[in-house]
Image 1 (cartoon, rainbow, N blue to C red):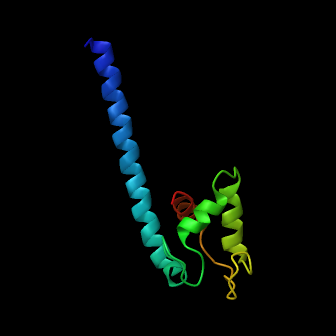
Image 2 (image 1 turned 180 degrees about the vertical axis):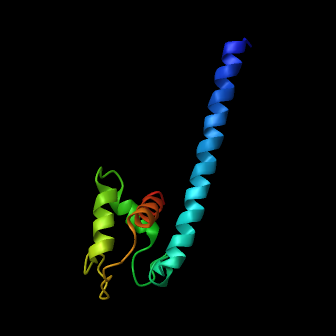
Length: 109
């Protein structure tokens, strides 16, 4: 193999590793935040508790270009009846950066 090919391969592997580590760090941050804001009292990753699972939420919003903004708005203002449950999700007081981290993580499920 020539040197240029090896350099490109090394750069590609480096970027893939960096992205994987960043994704892992984001997931760890989001896991801490959903615990901090008591999201797990009503939601779980893969099963309905009081509210929908995070996987259900991600599936509903998949492919929508404004999904992040819509979900952030719903979390902030609260939701009633959208998911068929009788218990509404009250408005949440979560800082912009924390909420964005949580919403991105939920949409990645």
